[in-house]
Length: 206
Ligand SMILES: Cc1cc2nc3c(=O)[nH]c(=O)nc-3n(C[C@H](O)[C@H](O)[C@H](O)COP(=O)(O)O)c2cc1C
Image (tube, rainbow, N blue to C red; front, side, top):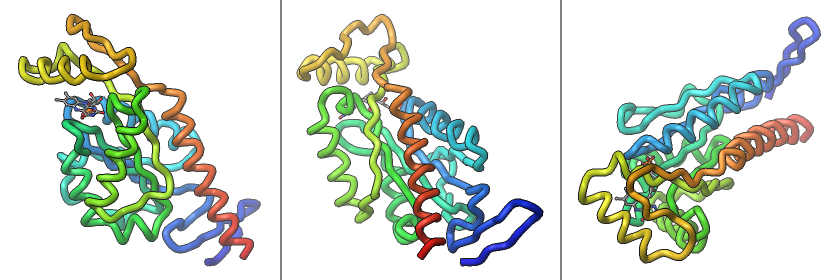
């Protein structure tokens, strides 16, 4: 760890969290219908709003994404048929050690996160077993039912899934339905940044 003084601004550096005044954070995500991309962009906006740099990368398009340029990472993916996005699983398997060395968090997007938390937790537990990564922070965000975007089979499948579940998910396929609590997403990003700063501060003090 080192410190430098630039005018009145004290800049502190620690490994993988180079400068306390601005941190570069990766938000790497996997999406099928695009809803997780919206959540990733919302997280990136919160981070940028607090003066840090954030790159939201769709792992399907950025298959060779690496952690080297980043001080911290948030990884997220949606669930289809009980499984998290395969590009997210591959990314985490490839970059597990780098994720473990940095402040990092995971978020899971699915309809189960809306009033079916036992299943939502089980999906994440399975993801952790498959990748070997046990993130310190996990966000559970309700997904969206984009009935108008689904093909015939997907719509049928989703109707069957929704029908078999308790809760208030809609079966009205004439429109799309969103179950994401955007304030929760923003709070997750805020908490991550706060923990990042206090982690840096405690390293500086010790
Ligand atoms: C075919 C299909 C299967 C799905 N299976 C699950 C599931 O097993 N569990 C769940 O919680 N959500 C499930 N969902 C809901 C999605 O996770 C939700 O729509 C999410 O918003 C998708 O995010 P994405 O657009 O980023 O892919 C499913 C959606 C579809 C279309």
